[in-house]
Image 1 (tube, rainbow, N blue to C red):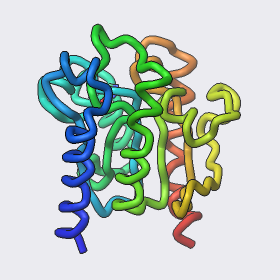
Image 2: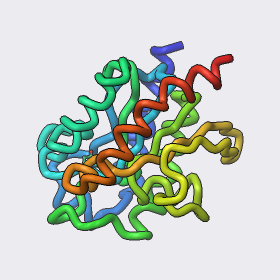
Image 3: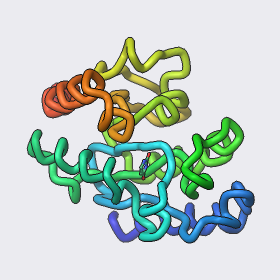
Length: 194
Ligand code: URA
């Protein structure tokens, strides 16, 4: 029922505004960046928070990190339009600072609602900020690229934590690890489907 899903996703956005989530961020942000892509996707990719470009355009991963993400998706034959991309924090933190614990906690229930509507098979987290909520005990350097089954409330997900493309852009070893981990994604998805 895609129409229904769209309505439910719009309701989540309306609730974030109505509930005045993170007013300190909302005050300075140009846009509430809810996410973009296929609402029936098998894969939901979750980053940290919008940056300057994303805030201006109202869409996630539109800058340099987004370009790198698009290249990696392309390289493994996954079209960006076939996945859904969002962030744990949906307003830009001023000067692109890290989102705070409180900001992440405030947005977390709304991210869960998005996942509950979309019902993906796989959640790919980019960087430690989104990973921390799905795999609280994990260290990204130990677990990147490995899939884990996670149950949160009624949601059953396979979570694949990856390095954040913005961090990997400028660090060669991380970049290589991220590209390698991406190459494994189609196999992980095939295994879930079989
Ligand atoms: N980095 C993120 O984590 N999210 C974006 O949307 C853009 C850059």
